[in-house]
Length: 234
Image 1 (tube, rainbow, N blue to C red):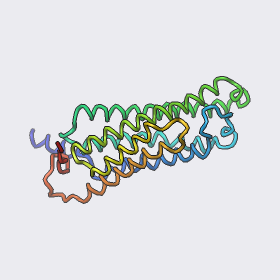
Image 2: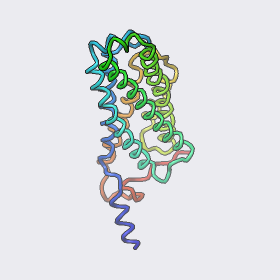
Image 3: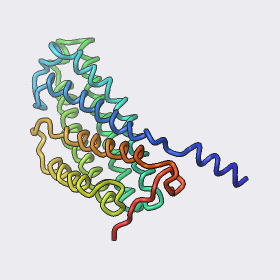
Image 4: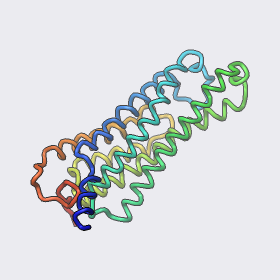
């Protein structure tokens, strides 16, 4: 029975290449954000010109968002596996909660934007002249540029704190995360491209974890998860 449990644990062990999920999240989200920013003005009350000229580009970006979300969930799993038994309950709760709220806000804004495109395809003249369009466009902008951005900042702060306490990434990456998070927290709704710092930081963390995973030898003592335990700093 004990041998069977050991085999099950080995089978469920996080693959060394799982950090690719963070890289995929960064690529998908950066591509989607570039499509959004190049197509839509950074104004919650703009008149909807993008629906006539760039709706296909925006729709393509919206189709990338679910894949970015799936990859981000895997990335959260990679970080938790990296922490292992040294996971701090307080910071891990904030880390997991902020990550899930970030995804919820990202999906909500994408869903409303997708609804705008579908409504415009059905009744273009009626939609642009209605208060519904004004509300939907403003709601999409506020959710994305206020709530999503702030949750990304909290995720970076909690993850960087865990990194400093356990050493699962270099300290300079954690301090860079603090700096980026501060930029996200103090930025206003009209600061274009500021959200880009989040996927770029995730990309950096993922590349480091991926390289570190493949750099370790198979015979290295492990914690039962295929990796060395993080160094706990007091």
